[in-house]
Amino acid sequence: MQLGMVGLGRMGLNMAVRLLRRGHQVVGTARGAEAFPTLEREGGKATRDLAGLVHTLATPRTVWVMVPAGAPTQSVLDELRGSLAPGDLVVDGGNARYTDSVARAQAFAVREIGFVDAGTSGGVWGLEKGYCMMVGGEPGDVARLAPVLRDLAPPDGFLHTGPAGSGHFCKMVHNGIEYGMLQAYGEGFEILARSAYTFDLPKVAHLWNQGSVVRSWLLELAERAFAKDARLEGIRGYVEDSGEGRWTVQEAIDLNIPAPVLTLSLLARFASRQDQSFSAKVIAALRNEFGGHAVKKVE
Image 1 (cartoon, one colour):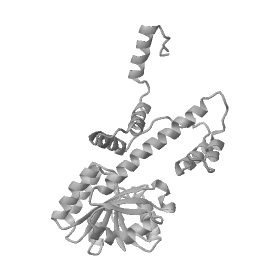
Image 2: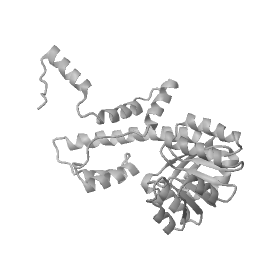
Image 3: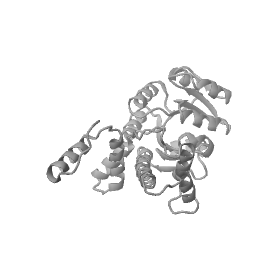
Image 4: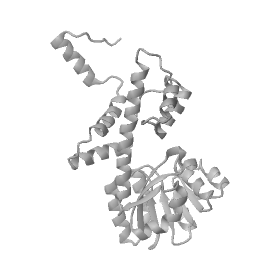
């Protein structure tokens, strides 16, 4: 199958390469040309801009967009909506908010262009292991995309979740769960690291992966990380969020669903970005005022 790939970053390029190695034709474009040599070496075609990509693809076209959510995605989709033709198909594989995907599907439908939202998980390991994909859209559009989905995914690695928006909704909740799991591992290993015992954290991570009820791929990655730097001394504890954790928590609030673990894991990420937490200063000052508890002065 022939596919246009817009965005050749850490995931987009690996997805293109995985498809090329499985016999698909890929035409790719990106803002920078850094990935073009790799794409072409693998047998793909590179175009300098979106107009060139649309012109190169045979009709009916299928274009997969793999760029950052928000304004970058909207800009690409706006251009595609103006340059594609009825019968073409657009796939958004980024971390878009599901409400945006619903609106975008409606906008493309006016021009008789299909739209699929494909929540994609797998990170930099997807080239080797495959990508887990949560796919929303019309049944006919998803069926048309199935050859690509089957070769991007491991066995049973993609699911048609329902109409447009459902794929990104499912991925949103997936990422919210991920926040909680990461936080649990982080807190557990901090307790080990700061205890009175001298735990070998790489060995503990390896041990827990041998039949333990907390074994997981994330724990395997923790084992790799600790093997590189046993106390993570070269890493600052600053954690960004992609937005999907926020959206998951907001959805839980809107649905009156208590989600304390997901909520607190999101707030912990916010706390990680503060060199000096002002709220912690207030608490320390109040404890000193009402109880005479000692405070640590800024050096």
